[in-house]
Length: 271
Image (tube, helix red, strand yellow):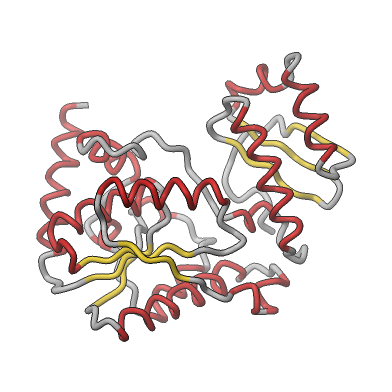
């Protein structure tokens, strides 16, 4: 671990030098592991010449938004809320394989407008080196379209290294589970509705309240497909938790509540 820590610290020095090339920066912030770490380092280098923009959309759970804003306030970071309009884009609502591209395009367009109006040099996001291995990320096309810089992936910083460095900085996100927007819970090709997103959000709050850390509730119309980490499967189906989850999700309108024995994994609703 010591060698991995040293390697991570070496990359952090490279990150600081990278950020010193900018006079000012706007960062896409979500309160997740990557964007929080990038925000911490960028604030250290640029101070108030770095501003964080967090998108308030129906795809963002209210709890996540609240926690992210509270963290930024605690850290005394410069943050503003923006309101992208991806839900006015029929292409996004159709939920085709390029859904993420449409969403990110709206996000980065809104960020770019903010940057121009307030004379910021560039916009950045928290893409890491591991993300480059995922060829399904259509949002990458939007990054290229709007010239978004990706400091973490540029210097080859991995998720594991970001977690190590976040822990050294005592950031509460160091061991935070991975998160993706609520729209990712709906199978590709199934239209996205705000009503479904609210139901998914409420269903996942139930799992969170029961102590599960990494989870997804995949929305298949009147069927909920629950994913948790493999080691948590026995607990999920044990009583009284099984009955609690069943009753609460049925109250939300799910007729069938299933458990995916493959366990938690990313992208399981993609085509």
